[in-house]
Length: 244
Image (cartoon, rainbow, N blue to C red; front, side, top):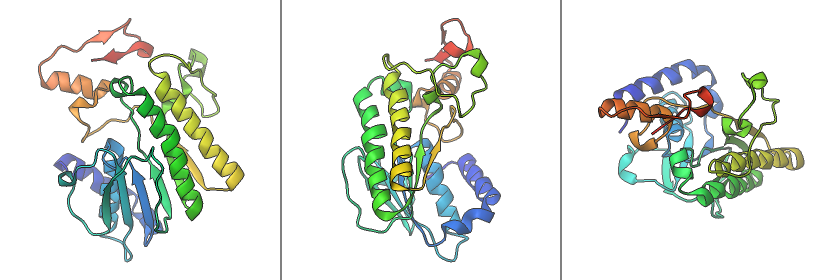
């Protein structure tokens, strides 16, 4: 089930993208990380699109954390518990792969650095191979973390900025794996002529985010809701702002 606020959000997104919804008509789409914050939004948007389209979108949702009772049963939506960092095959023709699987919260990727690397590197490679076999369009959800810590002259940051990222430290497993994921997209695009797109979200937040996500905005909101003190570590500068 989705909350009323998320449902309102979804309807607004569908309203504002109605003119492009026909592009998806009759297509088969794979979404990895479909149980995540962004993934669930995609699932719900395609569910709403299917109310408008003559030929519905068929959506296959992969997620290692999938729990059947968390989703409303719906035709043309198929939920599969799968770890995409492990090699897998798919015997249906696919038109689009949206690779949104990943461990994005610092709280969790510091606990699971190898798993973070695996899903962003092996998972991306596995999904790219499936896309290549199907000549499918491939969308990779990277991260603003590929820029690392830009100096003041590179804030705001342009896409052409190459980044200032450390290969060592507690964040490196996430930052560097996303950078390598982008390199894989470049290779498959440049050498295999696969249509790839890279998206670099900047600290996405909104309704539907879990209180146990442990990123800065859900931390602040969770602490406020539970009458807990908001803790800021470091000097309080924007480069060092971390809440627990």
